[in-house]
Image (tube, rainbow, N blue to C red; front, side, top):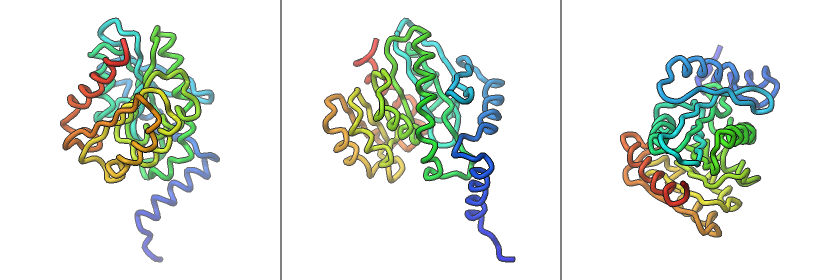
Amino acid sequence: MKHISSIKLSLLFIIIYLLTTGTYASDLEKEKRWRDQIVDSLMDGEAVDLPDGQHNFLAIFTEGEGTRKTGLIIMHGIGVHPDYPTIVNPLRVGLAEKGWNTLSLQLPVLPNEATGKDYEPLIPQASPRIKSGIEYLKQAGNKNIIIIAHSLGTVMAGQALANNSMGISGFIAIGMGSSGAHYLKSINIPVLDIFGSNDQPDVVASELQKLTAASSNPDYTQIIAKDADHFFNDQEDELIEHITQWLNDRTN
């Protein structure tokens, strides 16, 4: 028998998963495992279960230390969770310390072997979760709501905002690459596009593409953070400061 490469095994695993679930859907068992792990170890914020029309999903609400009436929806990158230690946890906790209410969403996920291409059918499935998050923040008294998304989360947010602004007041895209750039043509709310000079090659190369796509938006800002990588490792404080300054100019 010929040796089957690990890549072929990974692809086979994903195909079997999709066939057995009958649809391109989030791995709910994986979501449940993460939920159990996160809830048991949560230090900051409150775990809440929100509906997406078919299932409940995990979100983490962290009340801001102040009287601001703006809620921030945090959207993670590929295949992770709403309390991931890079980007996600620092933002949801750090921005709450600055006074904003944050709500970090569990987005649709696939098995670990899945690639960005495998996620494409799941992108529209983020919209019901975003809408549920918006409703939760509105019921909590937030007057304005802004989305902060990282990596694949920027594509999911971009697709939702391009089709329907959903009453969102602003969009902060961290590490958005070419797969999300075209959505900027149809997004007319304030946008902060921030990425690192040492980001992934596709993200760095999409600088001009994003500037061109957003050329009709009078409140589009692009920031290239010096020496930062895709996850702003060791530069979380600088990322929070960039976002804080942008938010302070546009929210209460």
